[in-house]
Image 1 (tube, rainbow, N blue to C red):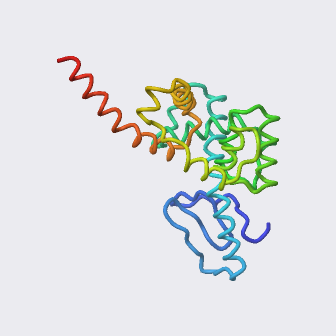
Image 2 (cartoon, one colour):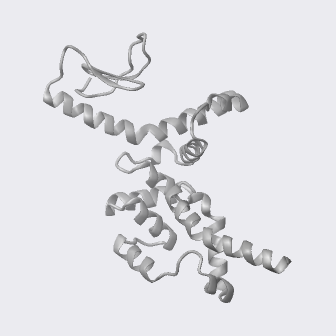
Image 3 (tube, rainbow, N blue to C red):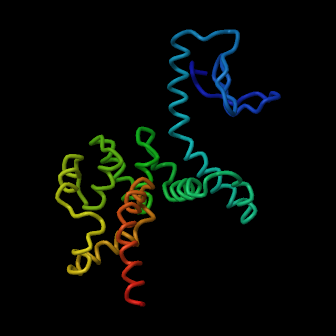
Length: 218
């Protein structure tokens, strides 16, 4: 086995998830054994841990997809304390993106961006993301317009684009209103951080609408 490779842990009193040569990962610690690793081995541990971090959502997604196929509704009893949103995204991506299309050099977020597409389109855009070293945001923007988009172009467009909710535009420009509604209808594919930005943008207009409703009802 190559130095630093991950291998199944032996059973001990404390649950071990994975074991590294000369070290063990448990639920809340990385423990080095008496037989200390060399610098090169220790450095390889870091690379292995990085791989674990990137692979975790794939593991969760594939775990649940297999379990649901095997045990049906009973599988939901095993979700336990998992964050529902995390499991939902992991399962959606794992079930939509075939193993043969997954790219080790790209993040789970890159694969989330292509998950709604057909397998051929997934392969195309993931290939372009690798070739052009696209960030997750650049990939999403590129898919949306059907061509490679750089971060500079995204920033420039955001600087001149109106905010998500602009009261005057919403009331006087039907095209903009339809655009906002389309964004809203497609929000399942939007990252959580972006949804939080939307929420902040919507708070004040929602308060204004509630006050107007109250005034008009009096």
